[in-house]
Length: 234
Ligand code: FES
Picture 1 (tube, rainbow, N blue to C red):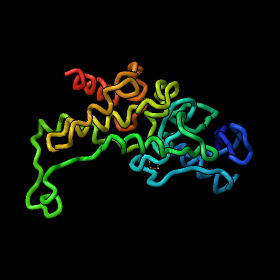
Picture 2: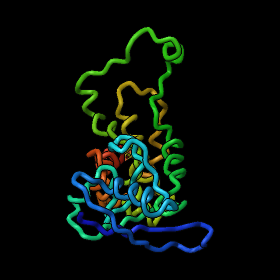
Picture 3: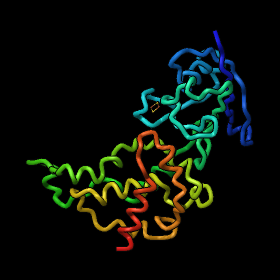
Picture 4: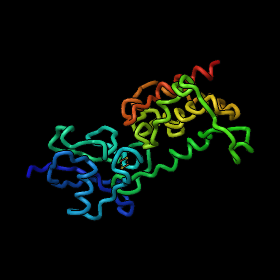
């Protein structure tokens, strides 16, 4: 059976250095994904390898990593489509490394939490004892629909060159998520725009667009940031 060579980033915090690559030969099967290859390595060649995953179907957003230099979901990336004899697997950038290719995404989630990226309503009693639906027209839904597809995989944050240079930058995902709620006609939250109308908010983005390029769900965070800028200027 034909094999494919995996070059996998290995790192143990106790070793105290950035890490190195280890190579594995993995039998290639039709339909095999990069995640399948990593699971094969863990189960058959090297049980010490750490990999984070859950759904295996591009829904949970757990298996983000860089494969041959590109941010991808490993479970959504077929080996044959890469058309390479060597598959280099690295952790996402812009996150502290925990082990091998597993990163710490705490800061990524804190940034969106600080922006209160959820639906805020004033009718607390209605929310606790609902008597009706919060209806939307098709046009109202259309304004936010693509942004609701985000699965919080963090690939956009890894691909963002601004986060690399300025870790305080809120990043494409948090800004996009805020826009998703500000543009939602059902949201009654106080003006959250002030929190992003600053240098490390919407104004530091230089529109590289890499966030939108790598999104596995077709979300366009770069567009959301431009729309937030427009709202801030208004
Ligand atoms: Fe859930 Fe890949 S394992 S998105």
